[in-house]
Amino acid sequence: MKPYISIIAASRNDNHGENMGKRMRMFVNGLIAQANKFKLSMELIIVEWNPPAENTLLNEVLPKPKADDFLSLRYIIVPNEVHKQFRFSDKLPLYQMIAKNVGIRRAKADFVLCTNVDVLFSNELMEYLVQQNLDKNNFYRTNRCDIPAAVDETWSVEKQLEFGAHNIIRRLGFDGELMNMGIMPAWVYNYRWLAKIINRISAFRRKRYFTPLELEFYSLDTKACGDFTMMHRDAWLKIQGYPELDLYSIHIDSMGVIAAKASGLNQAIFPPRACIYHIDHYNGWESMTALEKVNFINQKPGIGWDIVSETAMQLLTDRTSYNFNKSSWGFADTTFEEISFNID
Image (cartoon, rainbow, N blue to C red; front, side):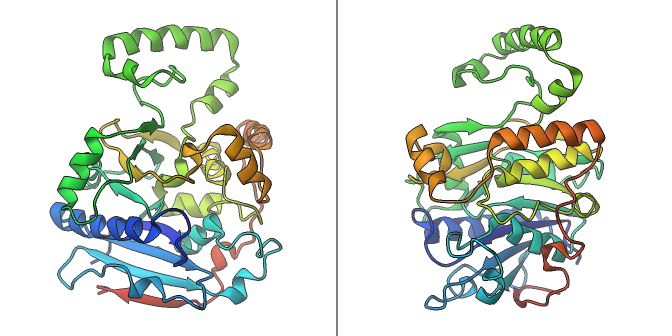
């Protein structure tokens, strides 16, 4: 059966981050359980980039779907020989966005979702996906809700999701009904009548002080978009996936959202309850202090938000794309080793 959604993530077995093994196992187990619960045919593609020679491959340590499960699982292995082609390969062991491009080019489903390996999908989000009425003219975003690392992988998926819903540390992303509010204290969103008033006042002020182009840019939900950006496969092909820059991944995920909007797609944001839960870790970007972020970026080559914003205005003005990538982006002309489970 052809999957309805291809889910793309990138990783390697080097425990990058905190308790990465636990987080990856929960991610895969969660998708297997929910694909079965909602009877939704999906494929999960994990691009294993530059796997350490001394460690076992991820397919040997992560859960595997059974023959009657609704989730198929594919590992695409990008070897060190390819990784070493990049200028900063000694500083960046994993090129996350280029790895996701590898998955996008090989996805079988019509709709392709790029995410990360340390998230759980809420049942409310799955209820939207199982309707199978996604629009190829949209790109889809949802909120990322960070939850404590204390979530236990021995719990059932349902208990993990219940824990997540009641233990949100921070919420990243826009509320589709309150697009003009900007940054507000979390408690404001619990009082919809107050939030709607603030949203209306903010909309009036924005229209007064911002140009239509600035309003379009500021309405883009670029917060934690590397954890959830979904669009039709044809749309990913049109924008050439993510820009394949020889840089750390920060802000490159946002460039994908900007390119999608500039290409003519509409932004669709799932309701706040239809979120993903991200398992918090001490060295996650949102968990760092400002000084820790400066020190982190100082150790990696990256692109600043200032230039991303400037190029965004150019793309939205000209209704064009970055055109940085070669026609073979995502290493489309390269054959990689693939290890698959539950493939028809």
